[in-house]
Every structure is written in C-alpha cells, then in structure tokens.
Length: 124
Image 1 (tube, rainbow, N blue to C red):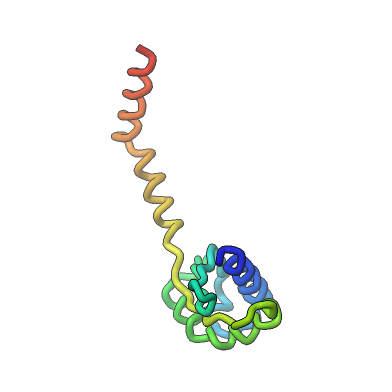
Image 2: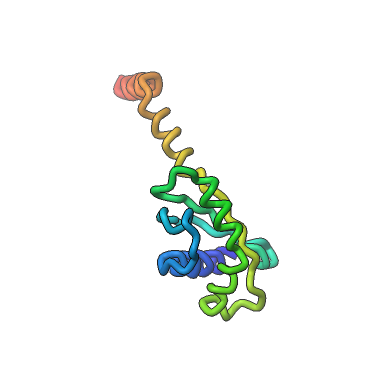
C-alpha cells in the first residue's frame, strides 16, 4: 500500500505540475501533495494536499475533488500497471500546522525553563 501510494503521489504531482486542470482556483496556487494513503483494496486513494499561495485552502480542496474524475483519467497512463484505477479523494494536509504548534510549544518559556532545570539536575 505504501509503495502504490508513493507511485500515485508522483503521478498526481507530475500531472498538477503540468497544469492540465483548467480551473482558476487551482491555476493560481501551487499544490504540494504530501502523502497519498491507499485503501487496503487499492481502490481509493486519499491525497493530502497543502495549497501554497492560496488564500482559501478549502476552495482548492473542493476544486480538486470536483475534478477528481478528470484527474483519474489523466493519471491512468502513469499508473497503467495497476489492476484497478483508484478513485481519488483530496483532503487538506494539516500536519504542517501541527508541526508549527509543537515548535511553538517547545520554544515557550515554560518548556525552556523545564529543560534548563533538567540539565542542571544532571550536572549535579
């Protein structure tokens, strides 16, 4: 499932980089596909996307979901080794937001104080 997901991610990234989808919302933003998770039967591919340069991320995800059948047809050639062409679903990738929250927490004065306190205990 992981290998197939990575192949699907590459095929989607190549297709999006060529600008084959004619949609004003998609054309005005750079879309990064961070991960593709395949269902156990490999018939559903859930792509996690991070739109860069777009104000409304939900609009980009909605536009991608609207064009999912077109996208499926465009990546068929790149994924011709698959027995079934998966159905595409697009979701907003929020992992970058989670990383930013964790980094903010780690840099907070309370955590820094606790880390300094732990280092001083080890020296004693």
